[in-house]
Image (cartoon, rainbow, N blue to C red; front, side):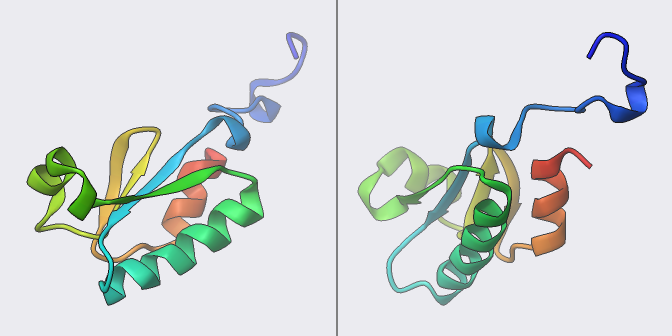
Length: 95
């Protein structure tokens, strides 16, 4: 890659080296909607993802209870309430 033009170099970590975390709670229709988007985008790009339940984690509850669903990318908040498929895809693909 050393001889490659910067235009063709990967700008960030490879998709499989990323982690998406969906923070929500059972019975939350927005959380269910967010999961559909996260599953689709992560599945398309080969990005691992996890779901965390605020009712089982007091620290997550205290931090995010007013914002769920919350999506973290590599531990940093990406969005909350509604997940935009194209925005998440851009974030994960480095574009």
